[in-house]
Length: 118
Image 1 (cartoon, rainbow, N blue to C red):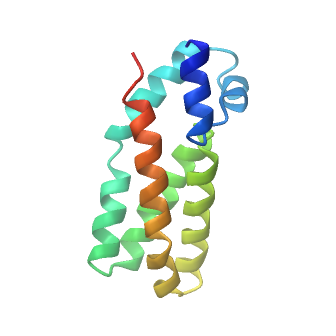
Image 2 (image 1 turned 180 degrees about the horizontal axis):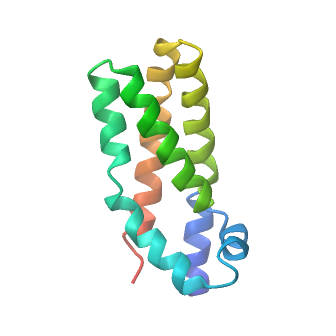
């Protein structure tokens, strides 16, 4: 990973340094997992569950996606998903749905940068 790509990942909210430590310095493996992120079905499942008013399905998708984002050090996206999970668990569906706008924005920002990975 070159310096410019690392900088863009950081600007998109990915803590490259923390991820590097989590991947024990294996940047190639980290990049491999980053490239797989857009294909993870949980974001689509989350959008569908929220759109269809299905809190249990949304909770499952948000919780799983939160874990993936945590492992990849996607800090803002992880934090937003954690908030959403908390709201769903607290039976505050309206607020959980309201968080989707911010989740969508961060998800799109991350994916725009990931699309540039070689």
